[in-house]
View 1 (cartoon, rainbow, N blue to C red):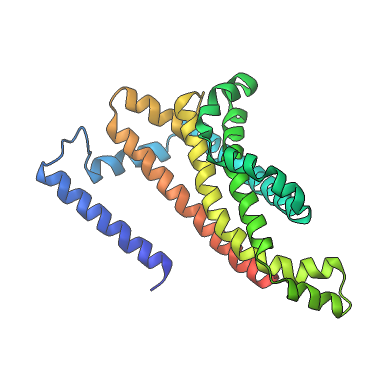
View 2: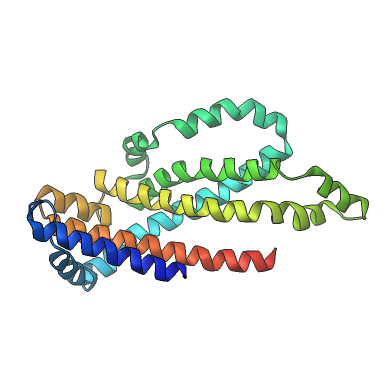
Length: 247
């Protein structure tokens, strides 16, 4: 069974259980709106000009920048630290500390530095994604069998050949898997940052609707985020197939 079919089946099961729980009266409509109410609100939201022109692009652009910048910078630093292992040993305690620190606490200084727009949430996202990408790249490179690289050199291959035929083939699958995590973190940072302080975005809508107990509106945005995450994962699947052919 395909991934799409499994996802569709899972969604259908969730909706059925949701409808049954809602119809049973176990949970108040104010706490858990019915699927019909939620999807009606969702339909109105996704056809709203403000949502399509302002809120959705704001969150999507913020998450995109966080993922691209964090992933690129993390992989680059991971490669540098792999080449200079002594530098990695020196920085390893600081990297571990920075990776474990609750980066959401940075939102206040980031807002002071970059304002309440996209830049502060993007910076928050980069702070979440860069260390994941760095550790994934370094770990994948460190796990490469050195005998393979040596074999390429013995056959007259250059360092570029070593990276092309050994290193990249070793780290690409790992980086694709890491990208799925990084995308989730970028989206999380964008929405969480917007919920705390923002001028627009899906997180801003969730916070505003939650403040006035518009639960159907909140669930509508949760459906949007679920669909956005599914779309991003589908794009990663396409990228993974192309990367596999290339390597």
